[in-house]
Image (cartoon, rainbow, N blue to C red; front, side, top):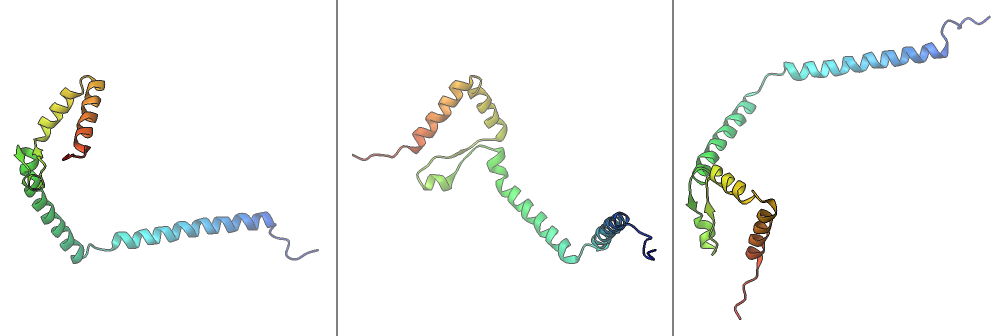
Length: 122
């Protein structure tokens, strides 16, 4: 008779999988606990304040272009006329142009073609 006949190979395999699975969950749980218990550092809070300040500056600078009518002076210096229209009015114009989808698409493609034409000085 054999003295090491207590566990079959199948039960050893199942036990190994069980120990591996439980061990994996314990490792993941320990890592999650370490991440959660770490307080927000002063550097992170300072970076958040910088981002909030930067966003308010950008929104303040772009507010007139988004909410009012204007002529873009930078584009005008390059020889282009770019008009700023409020978003609500731009949506109304687009909806009006695309009541007939085929005509709206044709109009849009015509604008693109006109814009991309090379000027000839001959």
